[in-house]
Image (cartoon, rainbow, N blue to C red):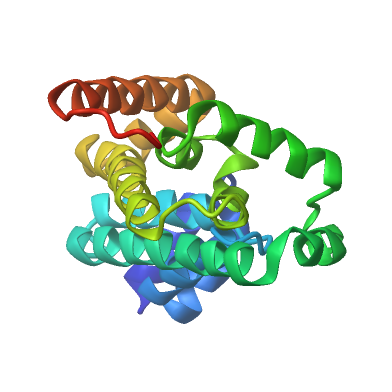
Length: 213
């Protein structure tokens, strides 16, 4: 246990807030954090995911489990959000949205994005703070076909986990090199988003567009 806690200590100060959860719950902290964040509950899901990648690079976690649980939490969490939007409807979401910082104005903006870009927004939203937490709920409210939502949701989860966990892990096993990336967080986030959009465009070019995309 001692090497594990030393590795967690090295994550500070950037990831200090999530270290206690990782120390207590291990991999499951990543799964639950991502799952809860993905249907609107305030939770440091993305931070926990990056932490998992860091610990995998240090040799403390197994990269396979970080990827699997991060991906599973993202897909399941978004589907819970989709079910809330579909079965409870917009009035319910507005009534209780204030508890998770979802105002009517904010919901309207997200709905506007969905109206403009359709299913593609489910994939891209994964990389955008605010949209990531509520895209499943809005997809449900707008009655997007579930099979189409699931497809774009899984694509987005794959890209998101791949960019953060895979990217951090491939930097190597030296925390100093990883922290250099975290110091330029926004730049790398933009690069990940551009990569996601490029892959999405390739996907749409090789597949005949559907009417509701």
